[in-house]
Length: 361
Image 1 (cartoon, rainbow, N blue to C red):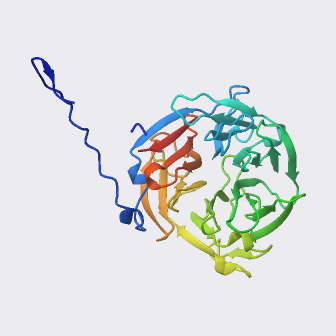
Image 2 (spheres, rainbow, N blue to C red; image 1 turned 30 degrees about the vertical axis):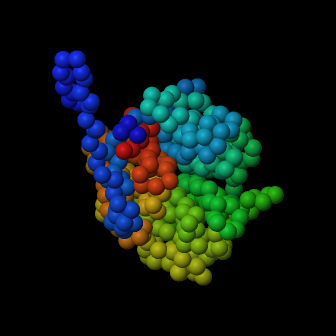
Image 3 (spheres, rainbow, N blue to C red; image 1 turned 90 degrees about the vertical axis):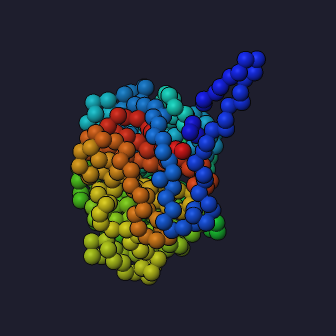
């Protein structure tokens, strides 16, 4: 969002000229499949540290945005979970913190519940109830907006939870979707008086990596306009879409040929949006207001940490931005805000610096 010469004569001051501004893209340009939101975001700004002030947990993975003011959150806050503990050992973190979305913000401790060990993704319900995926604890804890545990969901069908998103379709009940690094499955968690689960997809490729090296379906994003679930899979370098996801039944999709083809009663609703280079170990995604996706690579060589923008209209990569010239694998966790390309902001966790940063106009 932050983003003269003046002359004077004796006895009078000249009026400064109106600053020149780059013209805004025409609406027709914004509707083009090749229009890039990322290209418009010229400024990269550090919001603040993600290191938990209470226990020193670091290596931020999960990132989302608070929708309302409740508990320890103010509407618009960035909510982060840390994958590593103070020792920086992979998968030992169990921390959730919050940051106001302004430059120079300092983190607020939200929770360090033992169910959060290896927290890698989180999503918030409309009342800011926290749903987290914890790979090492091998569970899916639900906490209130003050960070207090409400219920810990564990056991089948959760196997090394690795992704989480809230979905409210325009018609039909809300749900959370979760992915597993242990078996490459996609689970719908149905919200009612008691939680029920539908394993709607199976067979996506995983590498069975240890904490810090796992590649599997992750980085979930949901588009309510089309009831479409998106996710990245860093093991086969793809971004996949499930259309009409709220109506996909248990066992509806089975991935085959290393996640490149699909079978099952809902196979027609699954598609590979993008596959191969420049995708390189993607783990995180965020949905932009115009329906495009941004994706963060983790396996680019040192000095190259790319955020890629994918046109979901044209199913292709249309823009790339190197956001960290340091060690490889810096980008974990992404979120976007805004109602149009003109006010979009893209937030991301930079694990090289343990900071949350934003790309903005």
